[in-house]
Image (cartoon, rainbow, N blue to C red; front, side, top):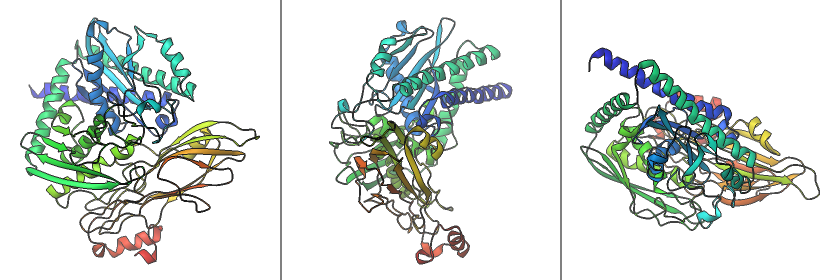
Length: 539
């Protein structure tokens, strides 16, 4: 390929990324749920006619993007080519063929140019409610966790399936929000398709074949070059998580060969009877993300860069089989990167960050007026983050969602959705693990029902009994805690009650430190004190 054509292809590649970024922004701007609109709990991407991901939006989470990369192939397998038409949109929330639990809605739309199917657009978003027990770990099977939507048509030739909407409306607590999000997802793919056709018409291409081959071949070559520079061999790691009522051991072995990287989760504990199990599609998503952060963080994420990572597991909590309960799959799933990175730290000593809070401290609140009072009912979802582990050469980030990548929801937006008051939300002093480089701080949050109200809440917390571990001599981060303001201790997972007049107090874990604390510079210690990150007694 000539230099001028090479440049032309690169420009088109960047243009394609802009197309899917506009696709994602459409969803952000039109979504009804705060988890999408405010936190960015979504993903968007474009695929060739074979279902291979060519580009993803920067906006979004690894758990959505990397599961969606595999999910599109399930849609292609379920819906025959002769039954695909311009104007179609397909949908599912199948945890084993989508993104791991029922709350995530995945929509896929075929993209036609004339009569030729040239590719697909896909997007995913977390909706506020799918019925059942509500967003929480208390279910004993997936059948209790909400409505299940098999891979089916949301719209055919532009005509929406009204029967599906009727079923949804009767099965969810917030039908207007949920159905609004369905239409936002469909519009998101529609915008992507329109921008793609405009781009292809402008450059004179009939389909995605030429640019797709360029993207995948260049990505594959660049990724293989990075693998060639890695040490070869196998390394293992294990870790404990809080689980629901008993600790759960996770284990991984990472093997680097000349041609690929394999992760095996044999030795991990068996499936749980509670809703913290993880379908393998979600485990793969976060294992691949951890590997890519180390091996090729600057290489675009697409089918070729993901193809060199192989993930396997016997049936266990990281490879849960249907009909296992999986509603809170993210808590264990978000631990997978720290698990994998711990193995890579043995292969690449001194180059891998310490463990962090990892799992989001999600809380789903179901608020209502107390008996005899006038008020309103509402479902409120909050995403909260603890501290990241310290990195080689720099402190960890405080209250940052790694590996999820979602944003913190503004308090004003959260309080607007329901009758609650957030009285306190601030960094948690002394929570970052000491080290040459300090772990990121967690945060302290106090939430109360509005006057005349009470609420039940679903706890989805971890790192309370098992704090994030430091690396290379760094100390562990502070464990988290959940309690009422009168001192009543609360469980880390499951539905619980906050009565009128009480406050829920959450102390989120801090990240582990990196390196010997005695080697921390005097300037860094002084800055920690001046900013209130640490107190004198902890220095």
